[in-house]
Amino acid sequence: MISLLILWPLYIIGVQYERGGWWVVLMPITLVALVLDVWLNFTELALLTWDWPRNEDELTFSNRLKRLVHDGGWRGSFARFVARGMLDPFAPGGRHV
Image 1: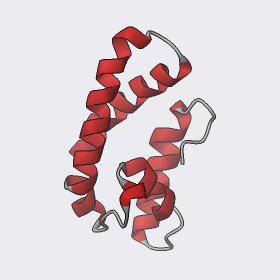
Image 2: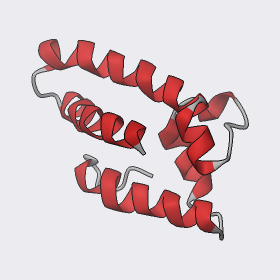
Image 3: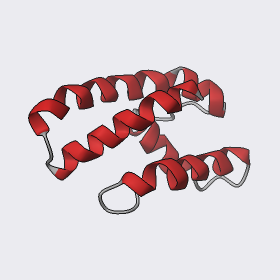
């Protein structure tokens, strides 16, 4: 769960970069966030969800969430909580996953 607390503010900064604000300042932070996202996706977040990335398309936790939100069990409930409660409110289009 600590990894989600680390990634969440970095995700918000990445969204601001996507929107076009302060790109010179935010680009290095976004790159650090991407590296952390990939690393945590294969370590702590894999253990937290007890589900490992299945292919090269699931390098980031967000891409894995796209699959997990359709799960009917506890993994799906957790994925929907993270996607709807933590990521969607800050996504430029309104829905992140």
